[in-house]
Image (tube, rainbow, N blue to C red):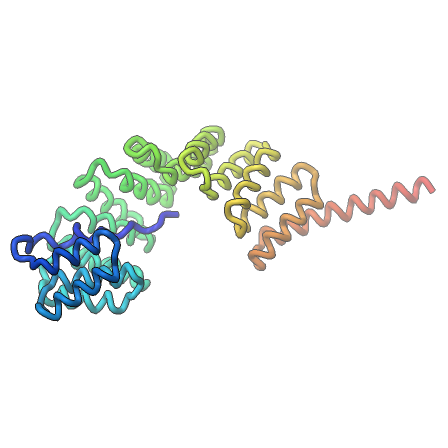
Length: 322
């Protein structure tokens, strides 16, 4: 699943309206901020605010520095101060929403992104962040509508089609999801997540060979993409290519040693190949990672039953030939 959108970079949010009046201290602090020197940028903004305590952009960007440094309450206070000074700055509400998301306050974040849109209806970042938040809240139809608005503003944004595909996939509109992922990939062929999610949708449509080709593309773009290797294993297993599936699960585990589902699926593939003892060991690994993993416990029980029957058969044969 998708991660949330990266934060807008400081020069893109709410700092252009004072270009002619910005003092040298602000320009210096902003340059430090843009170059990633957060501590020096913070010191610069604070020095400026001591001289000009009602400089809204300095308060805002001091809040962005705090956000980027993980100081969330400080970020909330600084950006709130900026909004108090200039309540009509749409960009301020975007980063207020980013802070609220980081504080696990998605409803508040949604309201902030909506306020940004109300103030500036063509602010693409606000639509993107609102859509991602709606996705996280499982308001899928609203997320789709918001993504369509974002695409109308930025038709070349591959990520918008990627998130649109996610929404459609969760709505079980699988053909539409594949079409959206195709559009994302057309715009950004290196977007590994779109290739992998496209494969998942194709798998759900039982187009396993095409799904594997999509996973291969994801892995070609990002060789250490553990979930793509795992998904590839699932498709191979659906085609009864159990040895190939095990190799894919092994690669998943090499990249992500805590992937309980890979161990469980690996156990299933080993069981199907008749390697029952090895299957039990794989289920044990899954259960060690997730003690209440019901499928792993169930499959382990089935495998142990097979082993017991085999042992009983062996003993019966030995008795017969005494």
